[in-house]
Amino acid sequence: MGPHGRAACTACNRSGPAGVHSTVVAQLNRRLESDLDAGFVDLVDEMGAMVVSVASRVGDPSSAEEIVQETFVRAYRWLSSQEGDLDGLEIRPWLASITMNLVRNEYRRRGRRPTVPLADRSAEVLADPGRSVEERIVSIDATDRLARLLTCLPVPQREAIVLRHVAGLTTRQTAVVMDCPTGTVKSHLSRGLAALRSQLTDPTQESP
Image 1 (cartoon, helix red, strand yellow):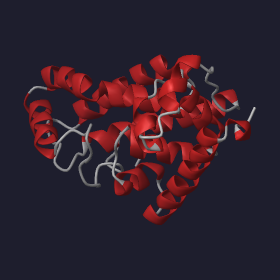
Image 2 (cartoon, one colour):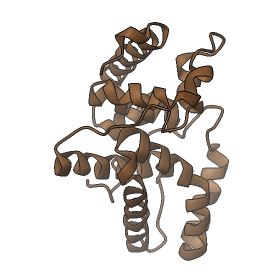
Image 3 (tube, helix red, strand yellow):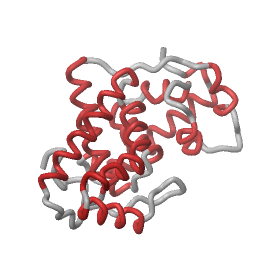
């Protein structure tokens, strides 16, 4: 199915320190089913930050606002077509899938990869040896050096890292959104994180 379908809705609920617990997701589904307009306000409140992160860190930050708006427009249209029947809907990977499709459309339209300016204020966080690359990915703002390094990765590696470690999807959910086997996702994650570790410990290896 397209971004309005349930292709990204069959994976398990998100887990992780910043995740929305399954009970919260279930409550959100019920609110959407009982009152779409009121529930949709809650949806934006609960999931807006995740959509912004995916749009700005996988795509071009200059297009993120437009992509976020269009994501929620498409989400509302699809939800309104379901007549309150949201059985099986997994909201987080579903919204991530819509966002990713829009980002990919923007790739094709522009014919280039996104660019992110380097910001010196990220240096202290990046240099913290007590934090893993995964932890730093979550905490660094989209205008910082780590976001710049993400744009230097091959697109599949960047997508996998952002979906798994920024959006907080499970590996299985990430595979659903990327439409590839979980083993492929694990490979993208391993290679991408290894490249980031190398660049963070040896800045001379950063691509221009």
